[in-house]
Length: 341
Image (tube, rainbow, N blue to C red; front, side, top):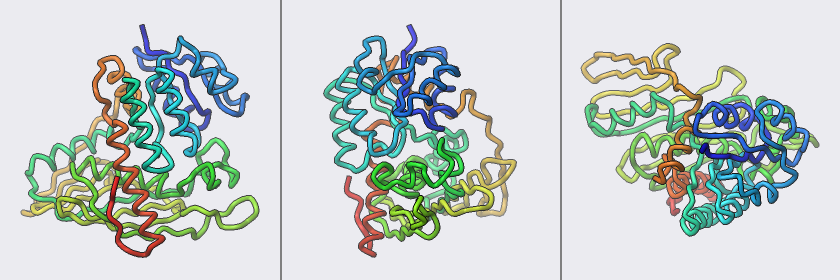
């Protein structure tokens, strides 16, 4: 029997990623959709099947649903996840997993006490170039990691979210909780932890609001640009840059500087990995495209069916959330802050 999955939240991430990947996975079945905007739910049902639920509670009370995929606004992630886990459902939750580390820890506890899978959708871990680079770094072929540089910048969520204007919930402080650091920064913070197989020890960050405005024409109360220096437990030091104010070509790359060379990820338009060795030799690798979208739904289904730890567990994602909250604390204090999950 396939895993019957209920989709919570009817925005772009559901329509463009999770619903198609669920539909295309032979071990999954879309049970239905819930969104506070009933028209969105009904439109998704027309496109992907299942039923439209009138409330989140109705979906969680349905005994035919095995798992839920939470794609609602950030402020609701923890509450819905805990309710779902307590109702005996497995949970795949979008990032950031919660509004703070305390909420994230409560989600982890709920998963453990109810013996259910909790996975967080940190999709950059599933990019083939990132998987290969992690293996290369772990092999030690380029020596010790000395430094790194990560960047993720685009024109802002109002350009791709379901509400394509400054009315998007991403600009609403009470619903989004985080600005660009929570939206994009957490992607790269998680990826750096994954690539280097190391934890962030301390951070120094500047997070500011320079452009994005709300419906009243005032600057939003969330950061739309941020720059952070990260010191890893293993000694490497590097930078993380994110922005909603990039009105050119999207930036999404990582550079890792090692003792015996440099690894460039997703900087070259043709080769996903470029290795510049210390002896002057340059290696260029073209990686295959993922077979089924991001790979998130495949990994989630495999974890549920096998009863094994998911690729990105709640415990693991909590550590990435702790990096982001430390960055925002650092920006407020204008000083270095230790990362304390």
